[in-house]
Image (tube, rainbow, N blue to C red):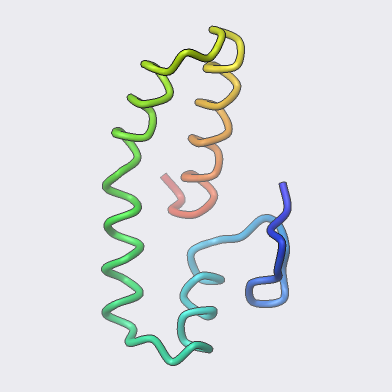
Length: 78
């Protein structure tokens, strides 16, 4: 639930604007920040597919799927 370090003064419930603010603090070009977030967003289906094909128990697969979906929803508002 928590990051090891804070992003934009927060350790949990991180949203896209917090990652953007963090990137800006590091003087990363805004276009590069957006490109990185876009690539991460595009990988959602692949990540969920990897979970589905993993050797985790069905219960753990379900829980991990729920966590990934909730984090993507929080980050991107999907």
